[in-house]
Length: 71
Image (tube, rainbow, N blue to C red; front, side, top):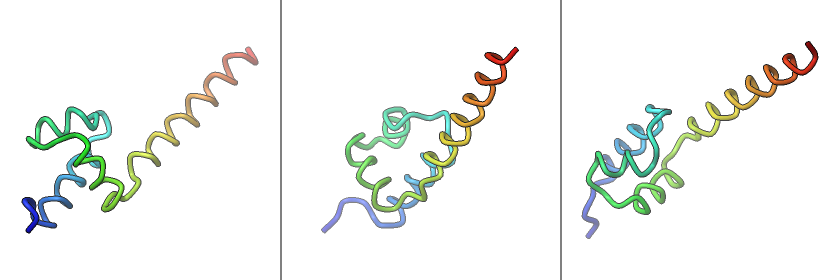
């Protein structure tokens, strides 16, 4: 039997996904679980929100860089 319920796993992933400045290592430490375990849950239950947020930030940074170069 699993040590953690599915609801706990989903809640842990939501905690990580909803805190964009929180690293996987920091989130797992706050939750008291192994980083690799949280990583596997993120892959299974994650919404991809962090990846989408990072993509938006990267695009904005690239646009800012392009504008700065043109000036």
